[in-house]
Length: 223
Image 1 (tube, rainbow, N blue to C red):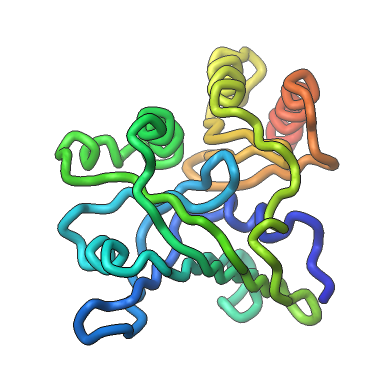
Image 2 (cartoon, rainbow, N blue to C red):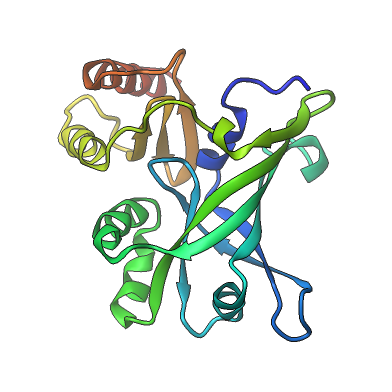
């Protein structure tokens, strides 16, 4: 197993949509896959915004176990790209967490504001048990859920503060929007194209994170 460090984590931040596979109520126990947008939480696991009336929501209410698949194939077909299959369970977000989750989700999916206004949609967050990563020939294998990230996450308050700082930063390229920041990289929307900038090593302080994001802006300007 030759999986690059943090490869599953970076893949989760690189894409905006995944496939949620729940277990059907009727006929009982069949996989029910559906494609939908998601955003990574501060702990890098998927959170989804789903309707109370959706079939997959009703499936999760009956059996919380689920799979979640993400893939990225920038330069070829799906078999040449990266894939991550995650196994675990989904649960509704705690009421006290929903406001912060909404702020984070809307940075990644601003159009979702219209769903939140309906009152019929709620956030569900994955608890990860195992995952299988495939990144190319020889770079594949099973990992435990705890292997996704071993560091304490950047707090939601710290991330929001950094995002606000860079929203007003004069050196930010005009066509770049910062979606999220974590200890391993930052998520970007550059000329309406989603991308991920990976740091050379994990950043453990806010000052190091600021310096790394400024470096990202400089690199994007010089492309």
